Length: 525
Image (tube, rainbow, N blue to C red):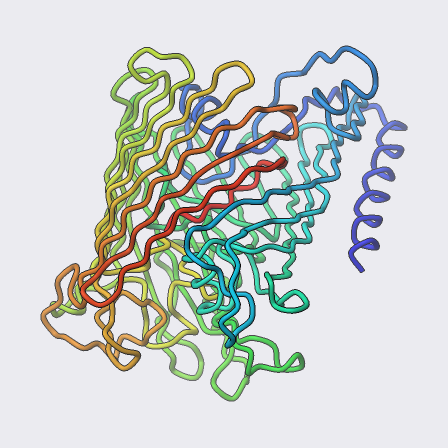
């Protein structure tokens, strides 16, 4: 099945290659997608980009010059397959991501027995393919097959939530010494002119100018979506329709499938001045089915107009509406102040639900070339993003769609990245405090998967419940072998403490391996 998927994408790309050789279109500039490794350089060090809030961004790449033998070029300078025609570009790679390490905290191997291991590892194989036809079409497709073991706190998350963080569901490998899971993504973008863009895909989106997002992050797993954008002058209007999984539950059989929900997401971005950008955000979550699995879709789901939608589904289920703002201000040439505010509900103390972000990011910090830094603060009041039903809460695939800590928390984060020739260094640290629940029957507002009508307090404050502190620090060093595929030899260490009056968890995780791809996979929660 996976081989057929790869062959189909490969043959389709070759078909377009031969087809476009027979035409007489203009020369196609290579189009590529922004990623976390080049985000500062491509987006924020370049003041010609009017709209930077919705990511990833497609941009025209600078043609590369390669030299040396075929083996040297393919291993160190190029994609495995590169087709460059006057009006067509395609890049394809076989992907592998392999690492092994040590976890000070024991990792369970077989539940419920007491067998453990201290060796986290990952074995990933897959492919990535991308390209463009003239400057009108951009496409990409990827598939990854994985077997892995994770450090203590990540392993605990997986067994509790039944998903791999940032990825999909899993099945255990053989005797239970790890997880077997796959991930796929695809995207097709049509840009008929400079004013309009249409994006159809199965992947992730991110809204914001910081590291985290309180509006829509890429921390959860991929989902199907269709996004339309219209740009005119200093304004950009974005509307996206997406479908999310309400809950991963092993009780559902294959015929029934998982309960799902729909979302409309809007963002109006305005380049108010040369330095200031303002954005207005709204997302509306609708149920797809009622409790008896009858279709419960409202016709208002088709509305392309922000703030113009109904309040409930045909069966009377109220939707979940979150509105917000996104602000960015350029202080200096490479330095930006940014912030977000999301309002989920107003009313009584517990019903006054909102989240906020304030941060500063800088390229070439302190005048040091290629030193990029972010300093950021985030908070969310209790019960924010939650709803009366899993079919309308702001989550997908058992993971939050905004901040990975859910709600009822405060966080301060620092990140620094430095590149020197082919070496890459990255440091990240955060401190957070959240209010945990004392039992499954108590709801202090941290767990956004608990219905809001089960709230345990009426006078809500951030941190209510069992006060829990997290300290996290992560340091990575990578030697980049091929900058085009991000193939690198990488080693890193993570330090994480989570403590409250009941339990204390200490994680020390080390790893080393050879890695590829520009995928954003993080375990910083």
